[in-house]
Amino acid sequence: MSDERVFATPAGVGLGSLATIADGAARNFVLQLRAGRFHGFVVRRGEAVFGYVDRCPHMGVPMAQQLDQYLTPDGSLIACSWHSALFRIDTGECVGGPCTGQRLTPWPVVVAEGQIVTA
Image 1 (tube, rainbow, N blue to C red):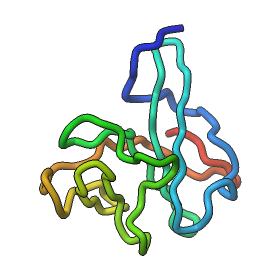
Image 2 (cartoon, rainbow, N blue to C red):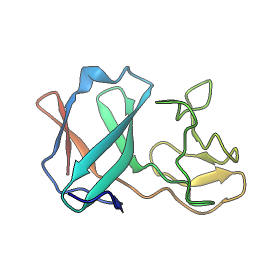
Image 3 (spheres, rainbow, N blue to C red):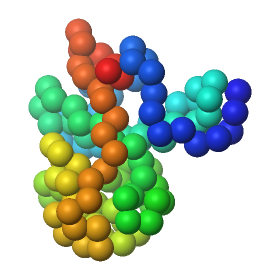
């Protein structure tokens, strides 16, 4: 297994129960794959989930300085804690800060029978 950082995962990887992420919150996931280590996060909105690679398009650094702290205090946007860039939860589009118009890299995830799974 490699320690290289990878930016995608295969489909069908189980991440756990939807209940492991509180509604309106986000959670970090680090997966060790044969090709390397993947860092991503998932935001939950009701029964929907939105996954993104944990990498700010502005500087290429992880989004959160504290574990699972990916959202603004009111939970309405994803926030890069390093440069204050703000992103829409549903699209990953940057709507404020130094990378306006850029997007987070999507990490396809779905809920299947109450479980979060990579798509």
